[in-house]
Image 1 (cartoon, rainbow over the protein chains, first blue to last red):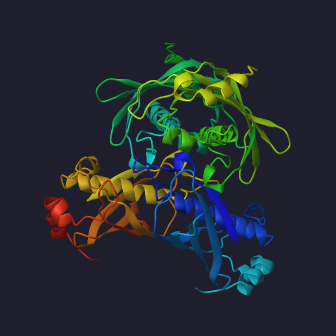
Image 2: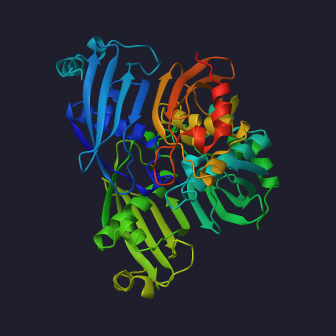
Image 3: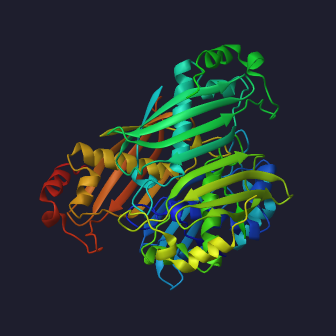
Length: 136
Length: 136
Length: 136
Length: 136
């Protein structure tokens, strides 16, 4: 899945480039678009009583971006076993330069914070994610 | 009440100065510290079932700030009638330069979003605010 | 000019709605798209040595938004005399509800911070803005 | 070095907890306070022509925080060879619970983006960091 983000002026810092924390926002934007495309909007999951907190993130910054760059974020499923989901992200500028490589890990929880097995909580999403596992 | 905020690197933009949206964050920080000082922490108000959404904000930017400036935010009660609260804010740099003059307006709501009269919902805070009204 | 913004998860707060400071970000996004459409990208203006700092903002919040609402921001020129620019903004949800009414004021400055007259600094943009003045 | 951050309302999201991207901001706050304590304020470094971009970050979220938690961030030097700096971070709530474990890596660059050896660019800081290396 490819997600497009235009770097905003308010995302830059006094170094003249995008502040590094914003890439974590873009990962969320891309992840939510990815779930949308699978037919499981994050708002629909929350309405079903499924939250998906972030357990970890890592980002390697390879080249800077700045306003008004267009950044393409590719998302894929690195691992998914219904309890823990690991996603990969590759972000590129319009000229094809890789600007950031990243990962995030997620679990699934009830509104009360209890860990859920996606097999039980949402078998459709569980199957869709499993079918897409593609370690890189 | 005087609240101190140190401008963070991530609050600057590529113009080399604090991005203007952050002053709205500092107003919230100062407002929450102001309520704390009155003995009504915002978390305690929420625990009592009282939310205080922002109905309006305005900011006039008089001079720029940047990392790592220390900004002092003075907060005062412009108007308070138990239904609507209007606060004033004056922000100064360490050298005494006024950098921003601002206002915010708030109402009070139940967890279901129903408008509350502070006289009934929290008479103590209602009285404390009324005693502090100081139009400038 | 109509600009579209999808409310992001990271733009919400624990009240369950969009944090009010984000509307100031959306005003900037819409303003930059508006300049783009006029043929004067903000990055091109900066490359010409023209900055346009924000002198004031005001927002009246009429109804909440939340993730994943689609918000349409309409921007128009309230006043423009080449020294000071005042823009108006109306933001609506997909169902047509007005969620925020806002304004921003701007001047024009050189890289050294000297005030510029847009008539001299960029007559094309000055004329384009003047032709669009539409007080509401 | 211990740095204190009070979680702000605007740092929470609709899950009711601190949005995970903010921890990357707190790492920056703590890192800058750490450099200050060493006598090398980040603004002073920039004034000397030394920037220190972030090459990577990773965060493992162990427990949630929310407004108005007080978070203590401990920072230490994991590795430092004058070309690359690796910092470690441990974040705890007031009750001692670890909420986040994190790392960041940095290089040093001139205003033109040329890689610098800290031995040459700022021997004092280079020595101070080397003396503090403490892998955990």
